[in-house]
Each structure stands twice: as structure tokens, then as C-alpha cells.
Image 1 (cartoon, one colour):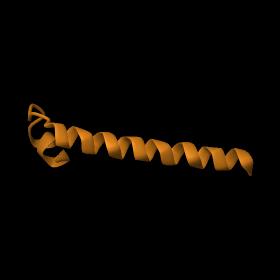
Image 2 (cartoon, rainbow, N blue to C red; image 1 turned 60 degrees about the vertical axis):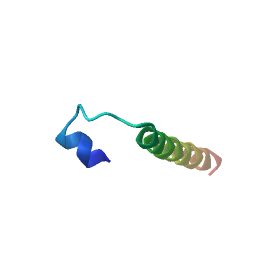
Image 3 (spheres, one colour; image 1 turned 135 degrees about the vertical axis):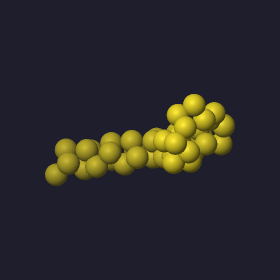
Image 4 (cartoon, rainbow, N blue to C red; image 1 turned 60 degrees about the horizontal axis):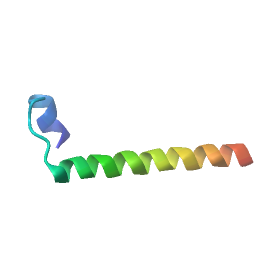
Length: 42
């Protein structure tokens, strides 16, 4: 899905693609928050 965007930045984003990107972003953000919490406890 990212490759298509790189080839053509004007390629329309469908809802499924946006949802996948959002889930990936949120989950990676959550992992960063958890790791920073662990560093504070240590």
C-alpha cells in the first residue's frame, strides 16, 4: 500500500488502507509509551 503512494502520491486512499495505517501508528505509539514507562520504573 505504501509503494503505490510512492509511485503516485495522488493515489486515492481508501478507508481500509487508512484504517490499517492508523492501527499500525497507534500500536507503535502504544509500544513507545510502555517502554518509556518501564524506563521510569527502573
